[in-house]
Amino acid sequence: MDFTFSEEQQAAAEAARGVFAGVAPDAVPSPALTPGAVADDFDRALWAKLADADLLSLLLDPEFGGAGLDAVALCLVLREAARVLARVPLLESSAALAAVQTFGGAELKAGLAARAGRGEVVLTVAANGRTGHDPAELAVSARQESEAWVLDGVHTAVPWAHSADFVLVPAHTTADRTLLALVPRVHPGVGLAEQISTTGERLGELRLDGVRIADRDVIDAPGAWQWLRDLLTTGTCALALGLGERVLRMTGEYTSKREQFGFPVATFQAVAVQAADRYIDLRAMEVTMWQAAWRIAAGAPGPLPASGDVAVAKIWASEGVRRVVQTAQHLHGGFGADVDYPLHRYHAWAKHLELSLGPAAAHEETLGDLLAAHPLA
Image 1 (tube, rainbow, N blue to C red):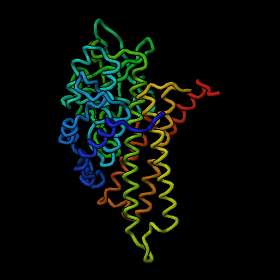
Image 2 (image 1 turned 120 degrees about the vertical axis):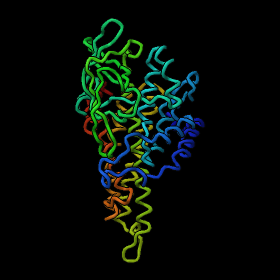
Image 3 (image 1 turned 30 degrees about the horizontal axis):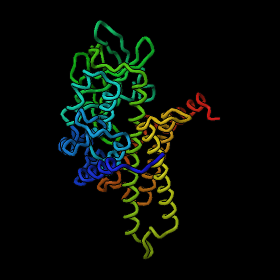
Image 4 (image 1 turned 90 degrees about the vertical axis):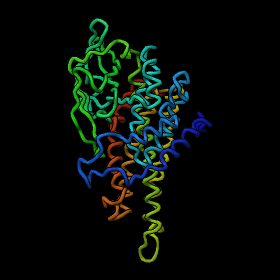
């Protein structure tokens, strides 16, 4: 296992830093200050810059105008995005597009891949199921009629649902297999209700009532949904890592300037120990996240499926990012709760990431099930 980044991966990260350099987290709408005032749409101007920098097509093959890179490159870019709380569906659209390319039919790929890679079409994924706690693939049923699939069910908390052109929806069939259907946001039988996330962003409750989707727009391949979910979860871990690193840097800068008894509080042992513990959290989050991304990218064999490494990464990301922001707020004192200071925005986004695609306890259960099914000894 080699965690050295390739030149292409490093170039993607450098390009992302250049694009996100002009994004100010202070400009992110604050639900604490202006409830309900979060923009209806994501940051389209930033989305266009990402497209111009070829960062929306990282995982696409060259035949579709992409760079042909992997999950590691995507996580490098997502890490940079989280440091500035970038309001773009980069994870969801990239992951959905990668699933279409990897498992979709030729007609679906030809009609969608290149356009999505150029940012002309925006994708998202319904990954939270009916309640956010039950398996997402069980929230919608699919039955085949002639040359189409008919979908019925509800998905909650679909990110960017009101702005995306298509939602990639997992659904279960009567034969107990899972397929992925590309559902247009505007389509007969599709309904969207507004929900608001912890960050103040708009989510969507997606209701499907007899929605007919043509065969060509359905991915019916074994393992496609698990692969997509693993990629989404690992990308969420990358977002948590980038956010946590930025928060710890903010904490270091603040405690180095804030003085008590004539000394910077950063020189106090109690403060230094807490900051050191959070640094350890971040390094554990980083190494487990790269392990998961590498397993997805390489399809490498191991004693457990890649989902085991993904579960470990999500356990660390969920617990670690929560501890990082809580310590940051404590060490910032009153500034930690000041809505005119950007830290509270990072705290809200961290809580959202902690719970996204399952909190730590859910992934501990998943890991336990995998260990029971695949004994290491």
